[in-house]
Length: 284
Image (spheres, rainbow, N blue to C red):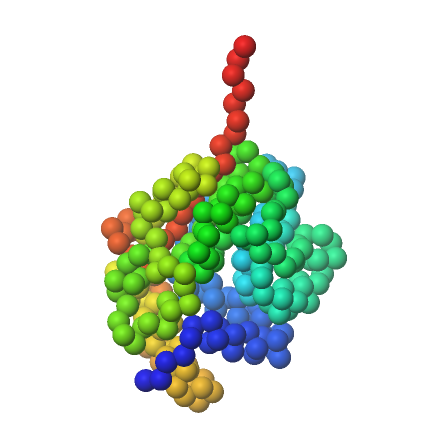
C-alpha cells in the first residue's frame, strides 16, 4: 500500500472544508466522535470548568496550535463565559478559522493570531487555561513552549496537553511509519512528561495514557484503515465507507468508551494536566 505523510492527508480534508463551509460543523462532530483524544480533552476541560472556572465572568483560554478550530468550536458552544485566543503558525488554517468564526470574532469571543510558540512570547498572565493538543510532538524545543505557556497562565491556571506517547513508536509497524515521521519525537512517557512539566515551572496534576488496548484497536478500525484506503483509492473510498462504518461504528465507539474508564498502564497517546502554582507571600 502506498505511503503518504499524515499532515498532507489532513490538509486534503481541510481543502474540502474550504470548498464546502457548510460541512464544517459536521466535520467537527466527526472529529469529536472518531478521535479518542477529543474525548479525553473535552472530558478534562469539563472537569476543570466545574472544579475551578465556572464562577468566572470571563474565562480566558489560550488554544496553542488551534489547527482546524475544532476545540475553539467546542469551547465557544459549551461555555458561555469562554473567551479564546487561538494561535498557530499556519496562516491558511488561521484564515479559514477566522472566516468561519466571523460572528464570534466580531463579538470578541475568539481571536486568531499567527504566532511561533518557541520564539514569540505570549502576553504575561493573560489566560486561565491553555490547551495544546497534538502539537508538542512536532516541536524540538517543547520545554521552551511550556515555559512560554506558563508565562501566559495566571497563577492557579491550568495547562492541558495531549500528544502521542513513547509507546506509539513501539507499536508502529513499517506500514505505520508515515503516521509519526513528521514528529520531532515519537512521544512522551509519563516520567519524561512529568520531568518536563517541572523543568518548565509547572506542577503536574495528572498524567494518563490514552489509546490503550481498547482505544488503539478502535483507532485502527475507525480511523487508520479508512485513512490508508483514502490514500490509495481517494474519492472512491467515500462510496463504500458508509457500509464499512455500519459494521464497525458501534463496536469502535464502545471500545473508546471502555478506554476512558480504564487506568491504562500503556497507550499510544498521553494526556497531561499541569498547574501554574499561585505565589504565596511569606508572613512577616
